Image (cartoon, rainbow, N blue to C red; front, side, top):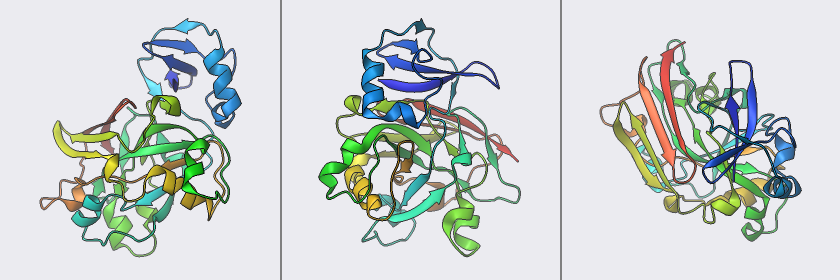
Length: 278
């Protein structure tokens, strides 16, 4: 099952549910896909409901409203750590992105003023459905996940690395988290460690990886985070990116005004953004 928002206009979106090749209006049950939709009971009710069929969306808005927090995992693929010159971490590296960085999967992304190192990162996003607090083990973790989506963890590397302090100022520029097109619920993704991730810039394949190569898998990450913070329905975890980012390329390849970035993850759809100067 897929949960999404169909964008009707610049001010109107409709919550929709995808089942196979068909789409259905979620409004008889919920006015939007928000945290309340992600609970086990709510998802079961949606699966059982006889909802009115609608045309397939042509433009998607972000698939989730009222995101609580976005927690990100840095250097979570061995090949990505190597290309940046970093030692693979002994424990997950954490940083946060503000929910207001989220835009739709085909919205323009704004290159910050004075930026010369805007970069891309295709990432598996984990969407929490059940509160997770001090989980006893990673074996419990996936029961707290509602579904999965695509995030582009857009980053400004000079702001992030060369300007001192934490990574956050290179991660939280406006529009820096394209999200969607939909959330695929867990019954359709039986193994989150068996997903291919790919990203293209202007048609050139830049990233081609698999979640099998994550240093810390999804279950471990959810368990680990629950030891330091409470995860609530509607929280999102960006789980890291494989090799191929501009930061690791000898020729740079950072994004410029007019560049087109396309990305996909197995079973989770596809994104396409044009990068524009702010």
